[in-house]
Length: 157
Image (cartoon, rainbow, N blue to C red; front, side):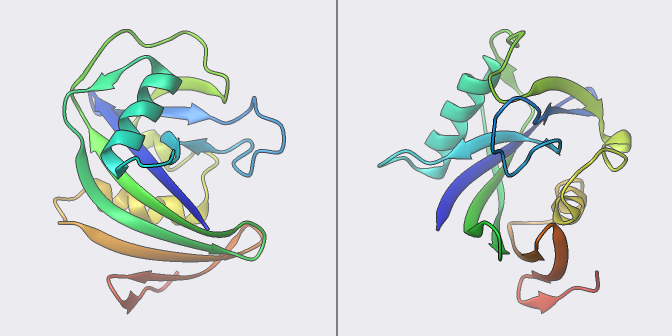
């Protein structure tokens, strides 16, 4: 079981996205994702998200908004609990290079056209609403999303 964080940093109606093209054996290879990674021992979700954002982007969020938890169940990758955040106010300079992928500000309206995991479309839609904290379960067989449950209610996919 993995514990991770993911943050979508917003600026000028765009999210800072990472195109995962640099790591070998990356389960997110060729996908576009937000910024985040695995917990280190003793970290809170906020500490993990802040550290990962700094390491991958050079930015430090002034405030993180804890938006939800996403439970991934995969026959290929096991179970992952991902703590999902947004941030809109960061300090620092965006780094030019990242070891894990290419960073780019993508207008929100264009993100749906990028290669994403199918379930990412669901939680990105939730992030673009004023919805309170949510729990989303996404079940995958290979790279195919086979079921989704939002706050205990089965979603049509």
